[in-house]
Length: 319
Image (cartoon, rainbow, N blue to C red):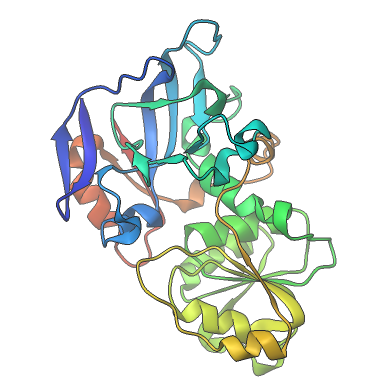
């Protein structure tokens, strides 16, 4: 089968064997989405080599005996735990120390004709949710997962830094339930997507000093080092900063301000799929404006280059 891989410091489309894990389901990929993490891996982030990609929708081609998933359209949780540790027994393998992560750590990913995941990772997709919507489940769950870690009431003043894919999804998911969100970014055309959904926006260059130290929660989703400093400028004393960015650099920021203002820093990575899937099923979000382009899997190198262009949002790969 064909797969888009990062090996020996280069991205390439390779012919590789179809995954074969007897205890796992084999999923035929219908559509996958290129994420900023894929682009960062290609710069050296996480030290991963293998098939890229962790956002997908597919059809279960084969499933272990006793599973009823065969033939069903599914999305998949990307963390596969050991199954034996206390975290896995509590049905939360996201922090299992022995976990593998689809297309990121120890497990080949979704930019391929087929992938393999444990059946417990797979969630059927309702007929009312299209393939193009379903591909967004993983990043939408990561955005919506902030609710798990930080209480966000209707009155909570939230600033989201970054108008890329994750920043927009965070703004849209919170903005669906509150009028107190502000999305800060650098691109008018991207901010317009949030504005159309009723979310307040502001260009970073036009951010008024009166906004400094006024937000209860600041979500840093810019994917750049400068976002950390902006988050510190916006959060109020004893407020919370939620860090969503993953990138290959080493951020430098004023740690003393965290101490003096008694700011809580929350790292936030993955979220649960079920709430995000229900949000899409209810028709609360229109994600079509976030789709920039689609490529054949065979043209995966060009797709990665397109995804890295300024202003580009989601790029799909279709096997």
